[in-house]
Image (cartoon, rainbow over the protein chains, first blue to last red):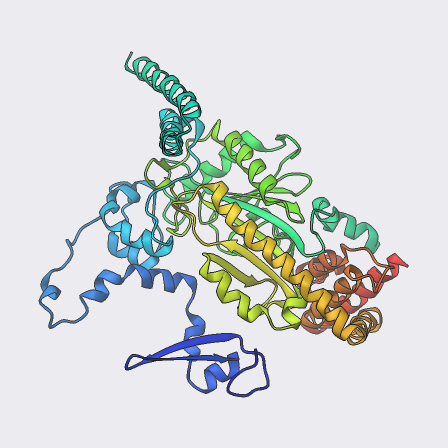
Length: 184
Length: 354
């Protein structure tokens, strides 16, 4: 596709403008994007870093209108990680955690951030370390088998379902005995 | 040193192999981000704590082997001069950040250069594993095994809810970044990439031109990787990337066929002109070199050129970077001098084939 402004270079940027609810789409090359003011030069210096800390600033962003009553509703001053000393304000500015414990300290405020960065996801659904994971592995497998069981019952595949049910029982026993060992 | 000898040492052994679909996918990479659980992340850790991490890696892994990845070499960044560091960056074995900004940074590299571990980059541990061609699943499997091997001795920062904890919120969860490097000349020529990139972005994947400033793709080489690391399993992340890459491969093949059928002679002309430039120029900038190399590689893939080996693009894209040119010349070079050396090196490399 060629640039809609100069009709010379290929369009490498796509802008959607919404003015008074009226939506227009433009396809332009980088040069025209700057020349025609779709984009300002300063945006170049926006690193991923700035963008990220921008993402985290959403709560201060909402409070930026000083006339709104919520402006007086300041966040508690000293949310600070007890392990590395990083404050929540610093975290928002830098966009990086200081240590593993920060995740616990800032836990309540992290869901909106993770949702933005990870397309709505907030909970880990992947690998679990072998040693540290311990029972979590068995738990995960059981959860998986349970949904499998539901699906099989739904499809009226009872023979298969019975097999899966037995597998879940085995896992339950395994988890039980591991827990008892852990207690001893 | 002769060029042949230099190249043998300079090009990572795995890069000389041809992988599946290597006419389009140059390489597949898996990166895992991990941290020690009781040490602050590098951004806030003290000098002593980082030293502890470095010492641990040196003690436990130097000269060790894991499966096919033998004799890990341990290199502390402070032991390297700027050119040596630059060469490691150009080989994609370490990041520019580790080379220039890390406090107490180090790396562990397997002899075949397929595995590299960056120590004290943004996270304490960044494992990278490369495969030639399109082999994401195999790379993930091996990276996961390697990760298990590290976990035998390291307590990773891990949380049941959030997964592997990383310094940057963009890596939390799996800590996994899967990427492929693709040569897409026909999709670029037919200007389909500008349409495809936004569509790919919508699927939670990132497309970047490599070897270029910003989004420009020098040599028509694009890197495609996952953006989301949290909430999806490693397998799902890789499967999603894989399915998009498969579609891109098909579209690129179709676009190539279409150009051959509709503008065969023009394409052949373009390819051989580029070959002529590479074979004869005395001064060549990296951008022009990359463009011509891309054309020549396409010529090899389409059967117009039979006298050159397919890995020439992969090799020369790396060898003509500033760091390598300076290492080969064994001296610092100004940009003008580099353009002359680059032209000479390319001519010499093409001559090796004839």
